[in-house]
Image (cartoon, rainbow, N blue to C red; front, side):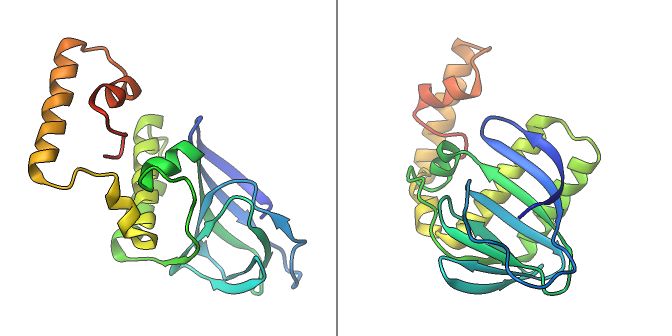
Length: 197
């Protein structure tokens, strides 16, 4: 989906953008494979998607999950629309989906919690929030979408009990005490957990 794009965050594993696309012309865009994994959170308008030959209607009550390599076409039956685009790297997707980067098919319906997280994220982005906070909130929003799309896979990578979570927290505190300047990635390796665990 091409159009005007304002990028709020562009890091190695997370991209957050405000996109306005479409035209007054009705009809399908040429088919093309999806170049990335992405989430499309429509804020204004109606978008029709044809993904691997299956048509669906997207509106502000749904989240379109763009799967890498899927053949897709789009149409804008009511003219231009606006959406928030989130792109995550394959390793980050795998972290959120229990170690498997393959994104399941589906359309996610927006819950009040997802709508609020989306609005807060946009407000921070438009207000010039720092990149760490934007990155964390973007990933949290994506995790919320995945929790609706593939709940069993999302929970498979998390400690299952209160005791396991307490051990993980204790291990992290011990590692930080031993090396206060340890980075987030190194800390995750030291305790055997991902950022989202």
